[in-house]
Image (cartoon, rainbow, N blue to C red; front, side, top):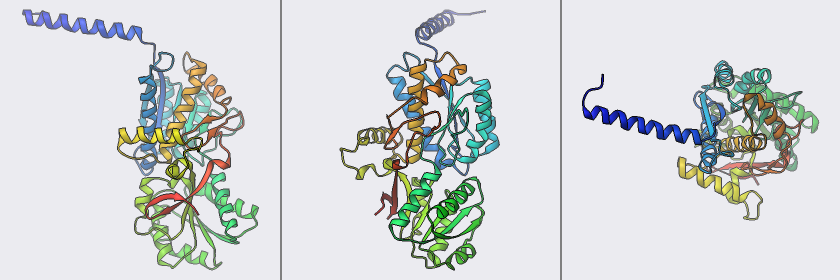
Length: 388
């Protein structure tokens, strides 16, 4: 029972508001749902957080301009906490419960690998940010925004060869990322005809002096460290303590502000990483093809999040940009049209990338990048600069 004039007026006001909202909703087209499965927290949180922010930024930009042909982008976001099992469960939720058209993320190999069998069975596009994630296999629905680990490894070896090096030491973790680096660096060393020695370590090890001592016996001219994140600080600290003066190379997954903080006060004299032009965009001439795109992206990212872009932000931004481009072409009616989205991405050619180059995909290439997209960067006094 409704009592009092105030109550009647309040009910009438609420009905009026609901009618207005319903009318507005009726005039707006149904949203295009895009899932997000990112490593926002956990040991790889430093990779997922900037990717998520960049994904949200671009979705907002599209929606501000009216969406995709009037359809707003709706992001359905989950944090897999850098856990493979949670990543698999999140992927199932996004597909089976949330009915998304495509999934952005994850950002590391282990969580991406956990999601792969699910998206392959359900035929839903997955756009990972992992360099070590395998994307090219028959009937693949998997894509990745950056160059592959094999391209990174080749870039490091080419850098060493230009320096005249003949003996290389490899120190790789035993996790999934480290295993990929171990296999690829071993293969590359043989391909380039270099003498090499290798050692392995657990990512939880607190001292690497025994492994480094064994590697020192070949008198190496360069060291490659196959691991991402915190373990690099342990290796670098021991590396310096043991008096190594050779170049220290590690993977592109370490290009982040978090890595610079890890290396503070223990930065090797020559610390090089295969990276992307977006990391050193300030050093590029205004005539550089993607300079305007990178400047605009960085400005928008900085305004919203009060920090500059890193390589994982570029991964996230490009992944959703490519996906949205395909959605524009397909105009999907639902998740069943993710096959069409996959096929549309495979036909995209010369698409400008915030990563610093262009994407040209094919049925056999779900990264869309060549090795020339890679540029060697160096950590110098707490900053990323072009390697000399």
